[in-house]
Length: 164
Image (cartoon, rainbow, N blue to C red):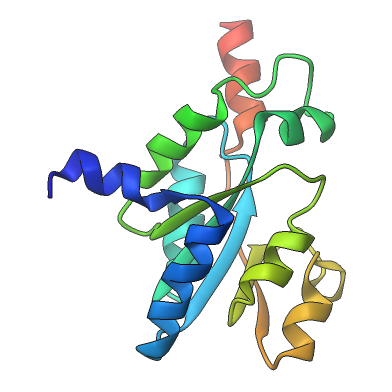
């Protein structure tokens, strides 16, 4: 299979994700889940995703749809890159095994559906307040926060581009 096709196979529906996870679970793989918009990929994203992947065997990324990003009030010009573009760029990362879109305000329903072993967010969140904390705790999973790489954010990149 070509690398191009491998990239496209990482971007799946929620139903397909369930099938993939079932296969991985049968092989006793530890499933890690994180989510976000990942609008303009920068070193902070790469560092965060590689740290998340190191916490298990498989990293599933819940990716906000364009509509979901707009509802997050990140600005009228967001997302910069549409959901298919964002997913394709993320699929090229070795740390990301599967990408699943979610259209809701939060990934709660997706986390409930996928039942990961580990839920990861950035250190700017309090563990107990992370969306899905209750699901993971109920099922014996872990919720972990990891530090961000200082000096990188999509918002600051956009500001830098606009200001020149």
